[in-house]
Image (cartoon, rainbow, N blue to C red; front, side, top):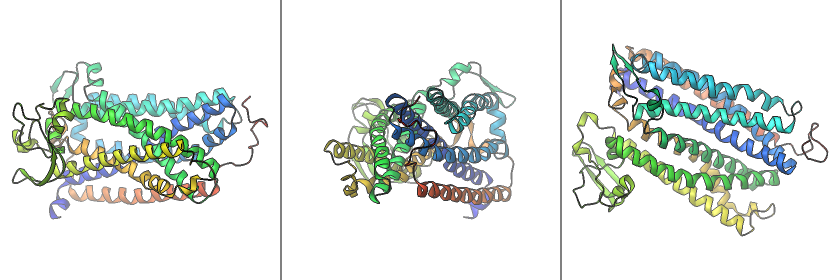
Length: 461
């Protein structure tokens, strides 16, 4: 505890981690909700079924809340590059500063401009133009995610040539830096995580109302759409997770070894075993207790049952990341993701058997409760995935180029403690506001009567 209060670097890392965990919720929701809203509006334009229009308008209210929270939480997150990590900004700003500027001027600006037309254009725009505006909001949110992941992926697998000149890293090939080895796995994996998490949150909110017989038909429609999306995206998520794992095995062997608490490099002709459970002992360089499956780690990392996996003992101690934290974070993520796939399959089977009807849906209490619980756990899966990704990169802030200890600002522990405290209070305040406004929206419920600007036939004109 004394070390924590006097180590400004550790405090800065904690502050950035908490800021990121708070912020990441809202972009995940805006990306997922924008695509859900676009799909609902597209269904209305194509079919003329006004129920899809009501879905789009209702979930847009939550999109606005999430968008506002994302802006509010994103500002202090980016400011920390200058306040807490100034040496990192000096070293990498020549490239990362440009990437973050491109994100603001492309994705965020596109999303912000068309957000006005999406919200205020129901009466002023034709259905086709309004659909186009909603599509641009969804596109802008995804473009922003791409550029943010470019910045983070470059920190994971820095490429593009270049060298340090007076403490500044000069990238010589920006295309190679943008399309670095990690981006091809990390962006689709993160983008799908946003869609999957949002689908489960929509299902969870809908399931809660279905069990209470409130607006059952409206929420059942949202629940079915969410279930279809949840199964589709979670299966794709598993595929991109495999791709991400192989990328880590190739470019960040220390992260892979720590994630699996794997100590001894497997010999030729011997497969590396995967530990379902273990309790790592970093001092003794072994696992106290472990439950292993032979060959599985080699298969996961190399797609070869005898593939070579580097053990932690072959990695210098000062280049090993914290083992226990990322070992269990990874398993929480995988367990949650697997459970999400199973529950989504269960829901699809229930739907196929004709039990997801306004009369029978509320009787599926176990299924609905699983979705209610998985709604917050879908966010926890994102958190634990990021813990594994970011903590697993340590002790490097730019992998192999710049250590975290050399990247911080010359601050006192007291100064960081004060800013950390202020942020914690602000986070509690804003999450409370979000909950208050969300409850108000849910209590009011969806539009059940025909809206004044709705054609009587229910068809777009």
